[in-house]
Image (cartoon, rainbow, N blue to C red; front, side):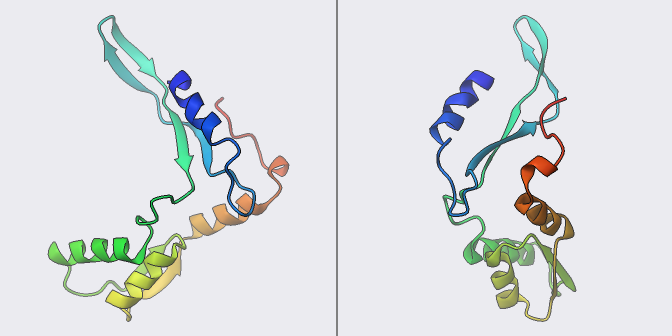
Length: 131
């Protein structure tokens, strides 16, 4: 899996956002799992890769979140929620305001903390690789 992943990472190595952050990053591994082969079971460690480009532009858009809200309503959600907690994606807040303006909104503390830590000097943070 490492050999399959490396060409993708190499392809996007120099692609960065305006702030200089890489848009395609490797984030450790997914939990180990067992894969069954013709030779028997094999422990597999799948690398985690995150595409931070938002290239499709849809999944965080107002239209995408309105689709989620409409799906909730179609499944029986009649009353508006009292509180919406989101990660800071603008489409999320705009969609909730359009659908349920009376719903209170709160920024997710985990995402807010992660965003602040991401702006700190990385050498001051602990190691993040596999053990």
